[in-house]
Length: 127
Image 1 (cartoon, rainbow, N blue to C red):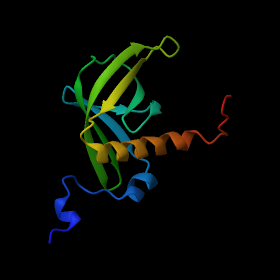
Image 2 (image 1 turned 60 degrees about the vertical axis):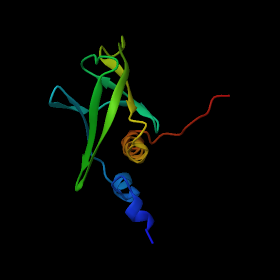
Image 3 (image 1 turned 45 degrees about the horizontal axis):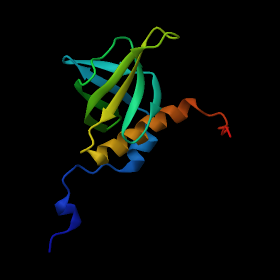
Image 4 (image 1 turned 30 degrees about the vertical axis):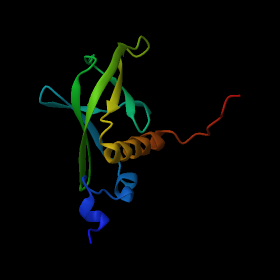
């Protein structure tokens, strides 16, 4: 009999490890790591960030996350990148690899945890 853990095709990451750690996010661009410090929005399929430079639409990049003893990475695609007149930086839409659904969920949780650290105010829904 084959157990479900023997059928696993991706590494297992306990959700508690991702949710409890505040780590660092990086994009690997031309063999150099660029820290992501300004997260604008996140979903389970991708993230919107501010970058100092524009990124080419369609570029395939690696996104990594590291906190304490947890390290993970996911393949991504740049969907769009445009100048934000207000900040002078580039808003950039990044899509997580749709095949890596387990990692997409973990990156969503890690990004969400970072956003929640800075978003302690009440949430008011507009009608």
